[in-house]
Length: 264
Length: 113
Image (cartoon, rainbow over all chains, first blue to last red; front, side, top):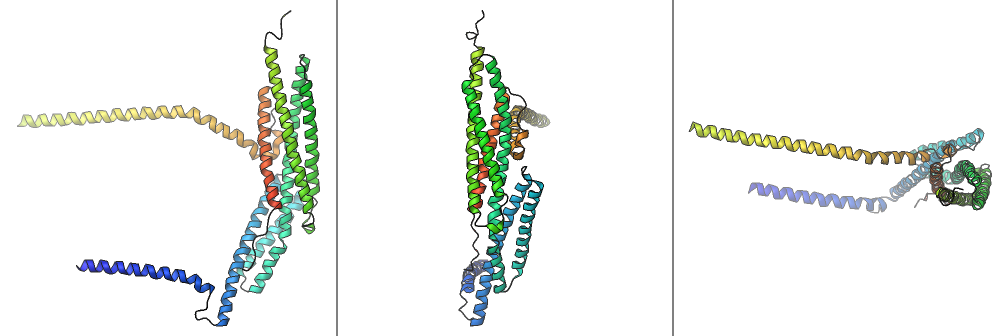
């Protein structure tokens, strides 16, 4: 009987404590947002400021971290590029590193800001520095894409040489290679255009500086269009190569058939 | 009485021996089966591994594209070159999405409310 009483008491206590803690937890945020219960106007204003400071710090930290991560990403892309000069690489790397350092210091400062006015000024500097980030990210991505495209064009040019050797051999063997030669001409013209467009995209965006942003965004957009042309050219050139390889294969089969090469 | 006891002892011994033999035979059979499964799995794993290596290599160094073209011009060489180029062209298209993302980037919310 005693045991039953103890058990009942324990269960009631647990239920009461659970309900009480739940109610307390639910009421806490309400208290923080509307401290109208028994707080003086001065304390109320201080609480509001603290809430704004908390929100601003969280948003500032998130934005700074986002930018630092993205800037570190493009630093790696710059280092991987083959068609930038050492000086150009150094200029970009220094500019980006300086922006990362500046954002890191700002984050450290914001984290200890307790005064709303100072915090507002610091947050404003994140807003003002956005143009640097807004330029660097697409600028470096365009340069990196153009750099990769030029490397692929080099490889495709090497393959063109091999294809031409095969076509020449087929012609020497007495085959009609007119169609294949025409595809080769088209491929060469597509590769030449892709080279020009990729090089132009690279050349137009390299000199852009954050001071010119957002005015220079049109240049970035134009470079993006050039790279779209590059990709479409390269796909067409690759399609030509596929057709040539198929033609070469079918020629081989015809040559291997005994009826085509009858003995005199 | 003693005879009965010894008979009982012998039959227990026989049962224990039978169980032991069955256990050993069963274990051996399981071991054999496992061995067969392992050996038959090896050739299946090998091409998968080598395929992963060949497909990952060009992605690891996309800027060194000029270095990856094969030296010969046989059908097989040209097929391999074409496959490499296709992979790189796909990578180029994927990479271009980061340009759009950069151009469409919006500043994060820094408002007080």
